[in-house]
Image (tube, rainbow, N blue to C red):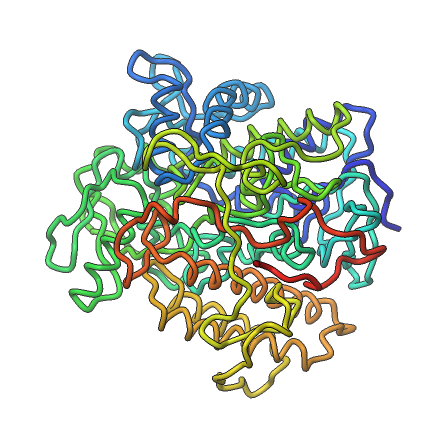
Length: 585
């Protein structure tokens, strides 16, 4: 029997566990629901480290703040970034107190690395490039010492709404039974959307479940067009793709093209490097480039995890260049929240990669993601424990709540917008439309569907549909986009949505039901990415439009899916409606 809870955390990455651990000793009944095991989250795969100002004459909170704003290409919320960099050091020290072990120098101080977009060394690592695994280990151990209920192998299907607030989730238990898990507060901490793409560094579980549930419930979601591709994923059949940490370039590894020439500043932000790689691969007609780490001394000692990965692929770090290509890595947007993690819907909170806090803007600065989860997970826990029940107009929500968000943030591209929002137009992608549950638009106002996609031999074979959606998004909405490529991807998503509508997806087989639900979530989130990518006629941060090669001031705003009027979702009296309302004007 599913327990009734005060706080239900959906997801078990750094953000959700940071919140749950912080509340575990409170009087609140806390539960963590995760569709795999506690330790099987995107956090586990994070190699880069945690960016935080932990001392040193060359670094300062102001410098970390400036680097983050610069990477965000004018769309960061300035106040949210200030919170991140100011509170981050304390969260790192708390993690150490919980038992996390980071790499240290010979003298006993924390070893600090430099990564792309950072003006100085401020990244703490564990095991060279196994930081996420160490952070996850420490938090899981702390959670087991606390009082939280743990629901492993449960799959959250949709939000439950009642009287204008979120009151729980509908989920499938490990046996496949549909259950309703009631909670006064639901925290979405489900991670990213990497499985939208055929090549990704994210685990198989990263299917955008939390963001999809929010989109279907018309909760405001923003910035999902900014999907960051990590430039140095090992070009290898393994999936998720082995990630060659940015720390390698921070220590002097070089990027080389098919001719062996350098072609980009290795320490530029990830969007710059990935775009340069995509252009060079297109120019040279190749599917990968090279990372040259042969000049790095003590590779095996400094990067033991990476050394094992590349040697398993038959590569010798001392003599071989590593084949690399960009892979989907992190989405900068998600469910719009205030500075304490509250969404526009009372009772619903979001933290980590599933949230749009305003910190990342159009492009995440390397190693700010673990930090964001730790900082905003803690802030949400404190707000819930203090009795907060709804949102306030701060952070990304300052652009969403009625009567707020009318002024831009300070600066130009190095500053941040964050306070200006635009609605994603309620139209299809060049004539391709999806069912109401996926599109979030009023089908009565949408143009008729056109185009078709070859059906797999078995329309209900969800693994085939998942692969088809991933390939379409990789080809059409990857590092570089165009109207034609986005339209091709939209056609495939439309075919997948029709297959879902035509199928009796409520299978008695739990694995089949979950596979169908994950495809449904990929289609829901993928359609939001496509619609925003079509609307944003510019190149900014992680969003590159071939037909609009530069940024434009008129697009220095947040594109929001979901109801803006009233700032919350109307009462439904039960399971959240599947997109009954119109998105856009």
